[in-house]
Each structure stands twice: as structure tokens, then as C-alpha cells.
Length: 105
Image (cartoon, rainbow, N blue to C red; front, top):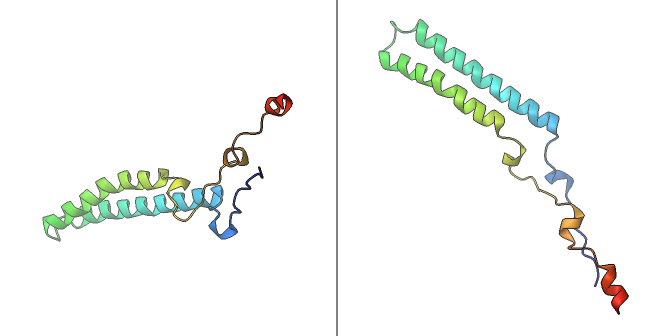
């Protein structure tokens, strides 16, 4: 019985490196936290100059953004679309042939 070899993985379907993935997530988090600070400052500075609902909307954004920023920052490599998971060869080719069966013949 011939052994099956696992299919080759295309270089273009390889996931990002760990360092690039962490850098991307950290920069996304910092951008969202910057938007949060801007929302809060605008809400405070514009409280008497714009309708109250605008300031409240900015405050809600400042409260909700940390939660979403942490969710996106912690969503790791498994979330990236297009990546291919590769199993070790021993899991794809099945169990190794037993030497006991060969000796019994």
C-alpha cells in the first residue's frame, strides 16, 4: 500500500509571521484607544456647544471602544481568512505499519 504524502502548501497561503501579526494587532489597538480618547475629549469639550445627544453618543463610543479593542487585539491568528492549517505528517498518513503483523506472516 503506497504512502500518501500530504499536499504541498502554497507560499501565498502561508499565514503571517507571529511578529507581523502581533504588530498589526497592537497598532489596531492603539488606533482604537486613540479614537476613544478623542471621543471622550470631544464629549467633554463640546458638552455645552452641541446637542446633548451628540455628547452622549461620544461618551457611549468612549465606553464601548475599549471592549471591542480588547476583543480584536486578542483575536489571534486563527481569525485570519485564507490561511491553511497544516497537520503533522503522522496525522495525515495514518498509523505506522506494525512490525508485529509483518513477523506473523
